[in-house]
Length: 130
Image 1 (cartoon, rainbow, N blue to C red):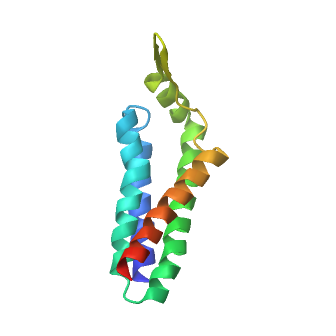
Image 2 (cartoon, rainbow, N blue to C red):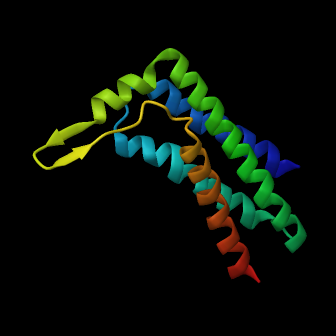
């Protein structure tokens, strides 16, 4: 129960800070705050669990909390137009290379990527702890 409250707090802090920094945050900063940082603190919270059954349950709880936080973040950023401005600022084309960022952070592919990325890292930790 304690880890659930910590996870909710860390997700609110991480996604809240990212929301406040939009659209001025760099693309690398965005990826670090939205993808990498949640994986890191979810792994730490996962490792804190004592038994295997608690670890397996925590995988699903932590991933669910992070995914819901990401969806809420995407909704709020889309409503205030921050994602559109962020995508415009960080997309560019130079000769044969074009980098474009989607204006829709809540696309199904992004949500699936978040869920599978988080679950994959936690399952690998579970396998290593056996």
